[in-house]
Image 1 (cartoon, helix red, strand yellow):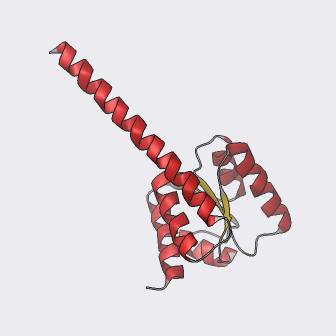
Image 2: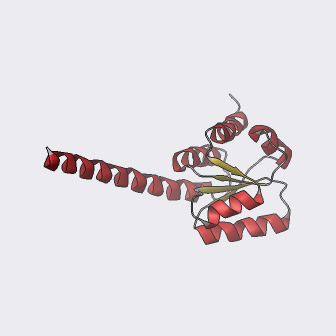
Length: 142
C-alpha cells in the first residue's frame, strides 16, 4: 500500500470516528480548549493560515505538522470541502498518524511522536488508576 494512501485513510477513519475537527475555526477551538492532540496543515496552506495554526498549537500545547497533501486532497479524504487545517482529537489516532509521517520523514514528526507517546502513556496510566479505585470501592461496599 502506498504510504500516502494509508495516511489519507487514517484521516478518513478519524473523521468517521468523530475524532477529527476540520477547518480553521473548529480546529482552532479544539486546540485552544486542549481537546486537540495534533494539528495538521495542508502543504499549500497560506502563510497567514500557517501562522494562525502555529498560534493555536502554542496556545493548546499540541504539535503542529505540515502534511504532504494539498487542501483538495485533504478535503477528499475527509469528505468535505477543501481545508487547510485539521485537528485530531484522539491521542491514539494522532500518535499513529505521526508515526506514519515519521516514516515519510516529515519535519518535526519525531518530536510529535515522542510528545504523543508520552501523552498516551499518561492517559493509559490515569485510566488504570481509575479502574483500580473503582475496584477498591466495590470491594469496600461488598
